[in-house]
Image (tube, rainbow, N blue to C red):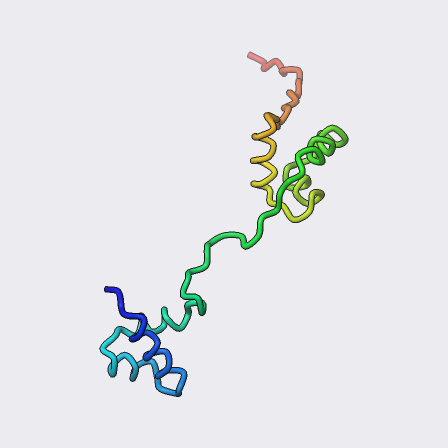
Length: 117
């Protein structure tokens, strides 16, 4: 149920004047959880957007030069060198650039020992 902005302001004023949250809940017939939510909201009454608060754009030209200079780097090492970007950001940038990073497995060839019958 949506409450009026006027009621919300009265409850917040009551609590800021020294009234307890439980008492405000009884006086204004509200759930205590509602009062805690209102107290936790920002002054503009908007919820914050989840996730990172700022974006870091990856310079793709710099990333391409880095890969040419040091092709054996792991993505986490690239992220550290690029500074302030995540491993996932590096992965997405590589995908957008059409670069696939695949491990090269080296087969270790051992002579098979002949088992005695």
